[in-house]
Image (tube, rainbow, N blue to C red; front, side, top):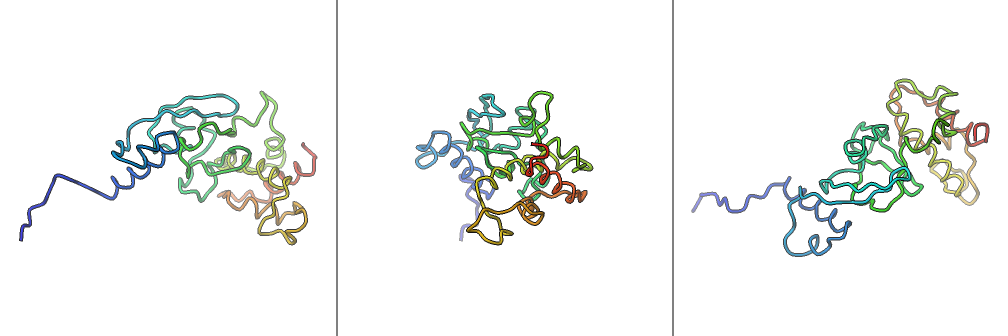
Length: 215
């Protein structure tokens, strides 16, 4: 038996995963022939993607494996969006994409070419705070503040979801328009963790805006 190792092809789990990620990324940005057919490119070959961030256009050349979170923070210096767990569990990286909230650590930048992305920096109108930002200040809905940008982005999208009539797990009757009770708000915000436990004040701030006190 020949126990000599064949070094002509060195395949590792990391290389397979990296190539798969690159294939998906390239198929999104207009290279399906590379993603699906002969000759996968190097996973580290940069690609250019056009992003719409807070109403401004940005053309970024990035590693195809770059997450939207890292594109915002490392390439555009929009550091308001925080990196917490980097696994989609804490909600600190929440941004709004086409009106819906997502965890930016779980999606690739190249998957959002042409999408409208709003970060915490894009909510205020100049020096005028967004009503949700003002409500968080008024109700002291933060302590260390690390999770606050994600909390606020999530809360803004929450109100849009409620306005559209989307039910939640806490909705008693999905056939009717849900009422934003404290239980509803808590359930809808359950993807955003506050390690300082400012939850009662966060809920109060959201109710304030929902009821029009600060809207």
